[in-house]
Image 1 (cartoon, rainbow, N blue to C red):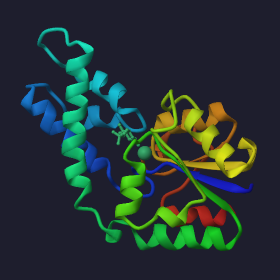
Image 2: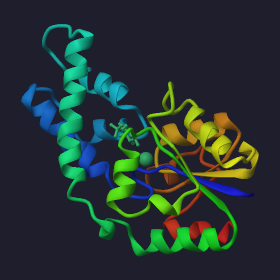
Image 3: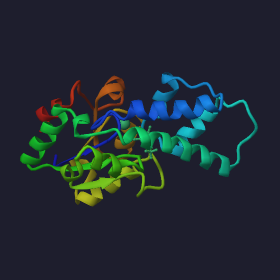
Length: 210
Ligand code: BG6
Ligand code: MG
């Protein structure tokens, strides 16, 4: 294996709680039922697809594209305000040291995230230089479980998908890794998914793979 492709939200940083709070604020204002179980279905899913899942519980009139765009923008404004509170302290020592050690061992490292806020987050937490390439929501047309974001990441670092591990916390991301011909490593939620190739408990467990 020559490279690691990392999901961002829920793997490198714990922004899941901010996604939840930002959607919850919008949902409460719209009187839409939304809870943490529904939020789990949003992991790895693009912003607009996430909105569609939340709107399954909307009892009001049928919304047009313009209204949906405004709701997605409202959520993103809520989310960005929360992201602005992030600092380098929001990256655990375990994650930071593991990334350094993988680099030291000669692996190429990339991000493969559905988020259009990826670069903003990496800048806030001081990790822009930790990766050789970033593939994110700004360079894809289909979100996970489609493998596009990971295939682009592999292409950006010049490696074949079969030589890449994908580290993920979302079921949709594990499915995307499989569809792309990569070996999946599941942490958090994805460590309990039967399709995950390798299950780990903490981030630094990946050092025993390499
Ligand atoms: C993924 C998250 O990383 O990014 C999803 O797991 C989120 O919950 C998606 O919807 C898109 O994020 P953003 O920042 O572009 O709204
Ligand atoms: Mg994730």
